[in-house]
Length: 509
Image 1 (cartoon, rainbow, N blue to C red):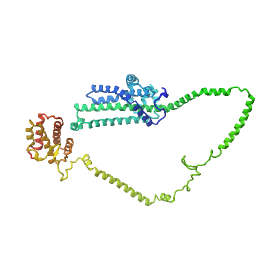
Image 2: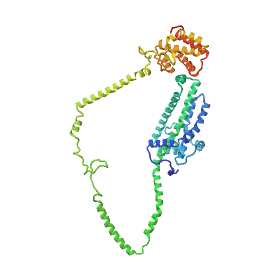
Image 3: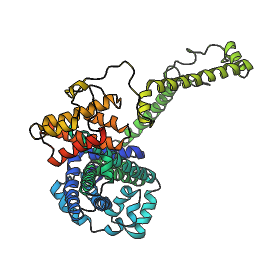
Image 4: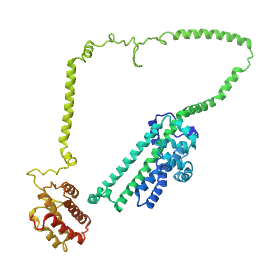
């Protein structure tokens, strides 16, 4: 290990600054770290998924449990890149099986639960210590930075969960709106069939991709904490300074030897040398005394006694004397003396009442401003009826909803239209449903509402049969409108029979 070849500045740092250095190291070699991690972990994840397809939770658990074995690869890469020995992706991947030989079992058993795992891992992998030697070494290293290593693991756990939830939400946002009704998350969460398996494996896949990005950063931060602790204990920064100093002095050695030879060379006139030496000594002493006397006088020496705090750029005390005797002004002293009087207490109580009133008024204003949102998402009451006098929409999705445009017996008319005009038959049932919702249930539909928003409003009516029929009819209507897929014959008969059961055949519109 040659410290002079280090790719980072070797100096003592705080814990958080050391972790920031780890992030920068991971960022500099991100493609090497992420690529090697993906080549090693994703095939293992795919193999676990194929073998345990019916047990997605076990796949997630095993993949998470094997993280200490995977972490050895980015630690090896970082230890090489630190001293300018950057390997390629192929070289790093080929080294991974060899890295698993030492202390793998203990790292996957009781050491798996250590919160300072990333901080202690270099001791086992890079220094090769085990048993009591490892414990003594960790006892010295963890006197400082151990708390930062634990916080790194805790923050990393929360970050993984947050990124996983974000990926799931982003995936849901990319689903087209016309297909959104088929994704009932509550139904999928409680399902036990193939749909639930696909959803869980999808979440597992997102977690595996998140680790490709995050886990090398986690290992790099722990490695930088380890390097910082060794820098402090072993004085790496001082060692580098002495090495640079030795290099500078080595270039000046020949010149020093030449000067030494010239000084020690024998003189041909010793008497004259002694006389000259005595004369030079007298003149040197006189010059030293003259120089000393000159330096003790201005402008070289200005003794000054300072009895107050002042900034370094201020003028001397003789040029910048404080005004007054340093006492407070009379009006300020009187104000401070009267702070405990009854008058100031009454003023303080009045200000307190005013501030509390402003806070209560602000809360009341917020509640009034967002009263519709609170009514929708907080209370469980039925939605408010539309205001009197507000005209009902006459069209939705390009469909006429007026009562005069609908036949008296909608179900029978739809049955007659199914063989020749299936689109008109399904459109008639959907128009009839929207008209019933507007006139019979007083549902506040708007011209800009989508099919999904209509179903949300129906759900608030708390009528399960109506909601189930509306969901089925809307799904078939969307399949026909957007995908040009007709409902099967059995579904056509069920829609008409369910219509009669809900709205009583023959009722007038």
